[in-house]
Amino acid sequence: MIVRNGSCFEFTGPLTIATVSEWLRESEPLYAEEGAWELNLAGVEDVDSAAVSLLLEWARHAAQCGHQLKLRNLPDNLQCLLKVYDVQALLPSV
Image (tube, rainbow, N blue to C red):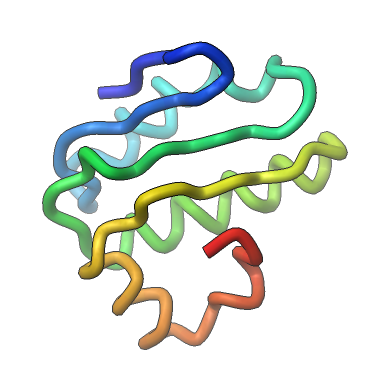
């Protein structure tokens, strides 16, 4: 679930292969935002490699639109996956 809180989007629930399509669809309003995209992932529970793919998609889309992506409160298990796939440099806010 994605909820807007001021200029920040807060994400809660599992982010896995089973839910990534729904998260991508729910995040579409983000693309119309002006300025930086601030995403708070503190409420994200279970993750798998689909979570990494979604973060990379958001980063790609933000760059195409000329926006800065700001990731906040990434769960430890997601940070570990980013290290395993060695993609931290593609997500400089991590």
